[in-house]
Length: 294
Image (cartoon, rainbow, N blue to C red; front, side):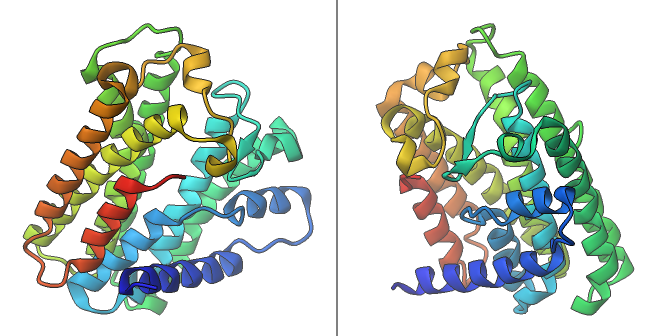
């Protein structure tokens, strides 16, 4: 294993352990449904980004624990909703049946709402245990609310719904979808990590720029894999965008052009964190996301 891989797995194992504690089940159907989506696997990119951004700013990555878990729980809620029949109507996620397939659409809706609330319970109940101030709590909550609301995931999802049937073919519109639907939560992940680490304004701006670039690169790479990947590797049904007539980055740039755009954005992300002397993990993370196959 490389140093990056070892650290990635350390972060990932830590987050999985904490998520398991924070989203426990009492045996009721709703709690089982909430836990099912959170513990269904995944790379944990967003909480890992939060932990590493915190480490870069203060040296103690565990200070971002509560917010890192909240980020992943909000992401899980967004995936439940994204998969619903009224949205993308996906039946597989991370190699498993989606939440509404297992528990029904009604319970899935409630599980998503429950997870969103649980995310904020976690940070408000535990922030002092990780040495955070009231000011850091408020700033972190403001970041999460902004990224998950009408200036984030919600707007991105609405724009994506309106993209069905090839209504929009211009690059600016497609980019707006993913600035809100994908990049916003990655930016929030970096920002809450920076907040927990007591970042300077310069450090916070650099980490936000990094996250914005990798967020768009991540989505373009996803569009590429939707064409070139397999259901087994991706853990979900591919070709759904084409089936619904949604314009993607591959439609605009072609596969080769889209991958060149991924490389360009990756290099911009890496340049953004040049102000940190110890940015090796973030550089490797950007490269990993650029070349991922799932």
